Amino acid sequence: MKLLVVLPWMPYPLNDGGKQGSFNMLEQLQYKLDIVLIYPVESVNQLKYQMELQERLLNIKIYPFEYYHHKGNVFSQFFLFRLHRLLTKKILKQPYLATPVYEETYINFVNDVILKEKIDVVQNEYVELLYLVYTLPQHVKRIFVQHEIQYINKKRNIQTRDFVSSELQYLFNKIKQDEISAMNQYDFIVTMTEADKEILVNDGVRTPIYSSPSFIPLHKGASFKACTENNLTFIGGSVHYPNLNGICWFLKEVWPLILEENGDMKLNIIGRWTKQAKKNIQRKYSNVNFLGFVPRLCDAITGTIMVVPILIGSGIRMKIFESVNCYTPFVTTKIGVEGLDFKSGEECIVADDPREFAKSILELTKNVDLQQMLAENAHKKLLDKYSSETSSQRRLCIYEELYK
Image (tube, rainbow, N blue to C red; front, side, top):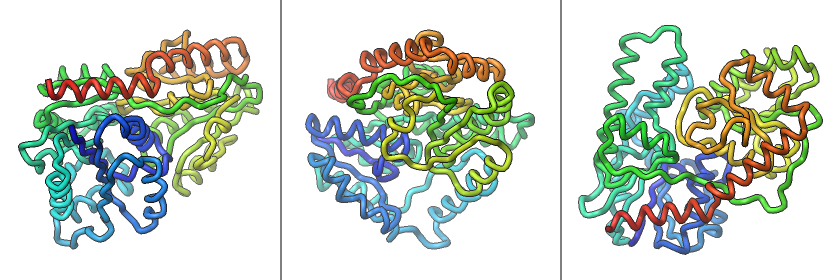
């Protein structure tokens, strides 16, 4: 079997959870499958990572699509799609409600690679490539890897609003049906969690669905270190809206309650944030630090309490895997831990109410024994259920099912 993996972005450097999830699986499977990889290079600056990526994926043949040469003219549907995305996401701060549009040169590029490499199976990943299924030749098997169900993300976003217009409800219903219809064009769907699989089945996806979570490599030498210096940590950039939504809720509803009890508490935010977002937050809230991208994540989060206040979205939180991998206890919400087998009071603490969330953090910072129990139990669960070996073997079994 020859597998073509099509990604909507270069999976390197590993500076966000999505890239980590895709890269780690490719790195693990490259010696077990014949893999070809396509992704867009959006700017010349990205070319500096090309050689490093190829060195880590030596057994994978890579076809980068030089996107910066093919951006389309101002009259193209592709250009209008990009303009719509810019207006909705960056300026209006609205849920992303446009169906992706692919430029002709990109469609031809993908299909040329399929013919040249004699591809048997095409695997599209992320909602950005969901609709590419309509351009694929009929002789190939088609898999879609659903990292995050976008219509569920939008549904939960809409549910946080005080008022939902009939127009917004119409747009949501339309895009939900568009996504489900597109998924039904595939031969297999792969979700990150059993919870997402159940949602899709209940909502009318008829294509066979298998759950196969992403993973992160084990940090060698990691061990538990007590949080004794009033440090909380959050991992995630502002570009991914569930992160922005979650941290804004935490700062508005939970952070004042924590500082009222312990004015020395500090929150360190790791990840890429816009200058304006950082300025707005630090102007309104005290004791908040932005660390940006940190090359040695384990060093930055060990000895802290991780907060994962996610209220919208689906899929899995790679930030939880990172926390557990480094023996860092975490406090999260039901949606934050949705689909992962970490139980409140055993491997983590789950709280949706702001006062309960604050209380849980304050109590955890004072109880080193509880910190250690949660961290060690969660790490054992990570090794048992979400190791690189277990997760990659699960994915291999799915590919085998495709040809039964």
